[in-house]
Image (tube, rainbow, N blue to C red; front, side):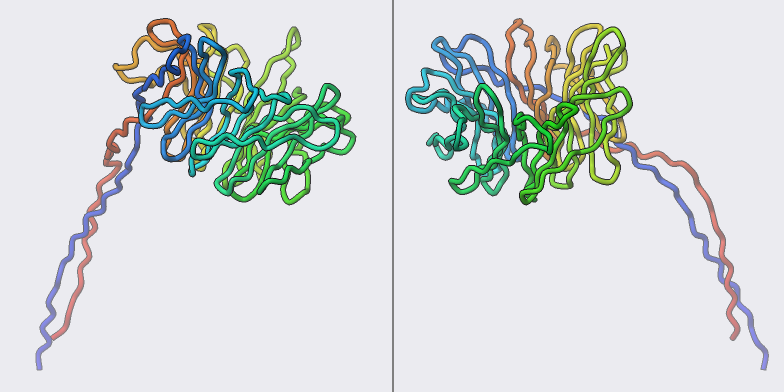
Length: 367
């Protein structure tokens, strides 16, 4: 019996493709100011639904506001508040926190569905309080104090708890943000000065030392992965300045530097769950808002605006949500200082053929 050997040739084309995504451009929406305002507003926080909170001047004082889909709502103030309130944080349920003057002094509040509620102050000698951040569980953090000291607090379901200060501190702690895991960041004090601080389940921790030459520092925001940002003081020899940083429990503190051509001054103000950081940096042409991520480093957002946003000067980027929407404040083309919303304009990925290979595989089969 004769065996017939047949050869089969298979050609496989190997493509090595790199997909790169360009840095997005942004379109800017001027959120304006409250009715009867004096052409001044600043946006301080944004949730994942695009709702924005901040402060706007009016002819009788300043008020916290909620901006939602183009409509700005005056949050009012606490009874006896004399037209003075501000909004600093909002969660994904639309609950807002801040501070308001009241009949018995400045008080932290929570605003929900049109009602502003005084959440009080710490017991003892405190005579004021202010709320800075709120998570999706409705837990609120801030500070309460008097002329002789300040204490960070956690407010939860009607109870305000003193978070205490670092060992050797001088009652100057403040809490600025809380994530969904209950981690709180802010600043505490010890014998050497102010320190970036975390609180979790009643335990207070120092974030560790700043880079060489640094000193007093604090943390302003933390995401759900435990990444925190803030700023620390640096000694420039002839003067002092600040640098923004990013921190986590594994890598410690990393200096973010400042913008190219900067004046050795920056501050990181918020971080989202994607690790994007926003803040402000001083340059030779003024104070500019920046966006930082691990792929692109620190970028001046003024250079990323689309053609419809020409004439704006962005000074501060105060918050960024998980969709990459950013809020802050700066001067509009008319010269008025207004809050704004930046929305990224996605660009399609660029496909680059890095290599092309052809592999021929020959098989044989006996019959």
